[in-house]
Image 1: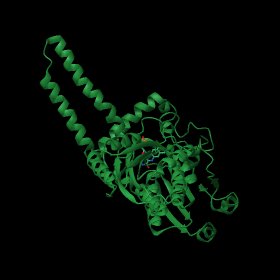
Image 2: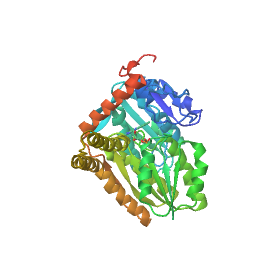
Image 3: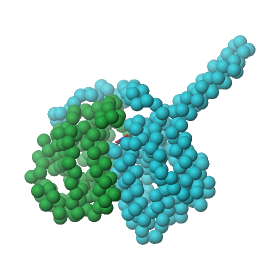
Image 4: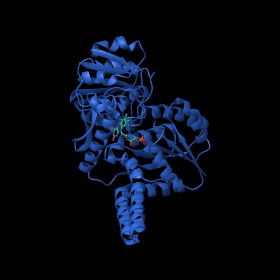
Length: 163
Length: 247
Ligand SMILES: Cc1cc2nc3c(=O)[nH]c(=O)nc-3n(C[C@H](O)[C@H](O)[C@H](O)COP(=O)(O)O)c2cc1C
């Protein structure tokens, strides 16, 4: 199953629908992660905060392909997208392992097929380079076997880049 | 000379970021203000402090290989605020992460540098501490162990009249040595950063870690989380089960 998360206005839900079986719009209307690790130690893969993201780990866990559409913010994800990602650490277990020679956590839902990231908006060359590093790190951290990264100068140009 | 220390951890207490800020502040001259950004409600207060500061020290945890989401919101507000008011405090960054390699903070440091460029703020450098979570262990364990040395010396003295001061001193020196070795990277790069902040100067980003081999660190972390998960109850709720169905 493919899961797509994006931070664009609502009308984009329809445009992006053909790209994935499930489309999740990150509207930013939820709390940021409180860093308590309860999603490991108390109620695995669930958050104590009862909002739209309480069981987001399970949604992510079921998808073997993840597509992220995000605006560029300093070479990182927009706050709304990052908020969703920060709330998904329950995708892993607390146990340590090695991936690509670095310590990481073992994966509760196993390895995944592919992470694709579409970044739109005004971007400097440095920010592009930061995103290259960041998406690579994310793919290893969450256990995606493949990673693809695309840049679009604006939201309007996204459709062309995604075609 | 005013320096603002911004704790970027969402935790109300026992955050490693706050602890690192406290340690750094010990070496900083002039006026010091400690702030924390946990949500949007904190922005206005912290920005008004930044208005009068020459240096802003961000101390933050690494969240999913980058800057935590609530801080991304703050950075956007700070960019607009500094550009509008023509402010240019020097920005320093202290990062810490859960995994043992400090270099896993590289993307975070780049994001902060990109933020500085967008906001026309000078980036002064920083330090990234791998295995930063361990600082929460050592800061509790060290005083306890020192207490135990004193306690056993006292007990011995009261019972036998021999306080075994030589043994106690040796035990204390051993403890101090272990702590120094564990923290030598933090101490060295921390001192370098403090020197740079006091001069309002620059230093490169020092990537360091708790001085423990990674397999040992992994073992300690695993044991730690097993114990916490027994107390938290998570271990009885399908701790490792791969939940693929509707749960
Ligand atoms: C949502 C979340 C995501 C995290 N992601 C990472 C990560 O990608 N890499 C890492 O090394 N540590 C990661 N950590 C661990 C934190 O960086 C670590 O626990 C840090 O010491 C917390 O600092 P604090 O006490 O100041 O909040 C993550 C923690 C949380 C809560």
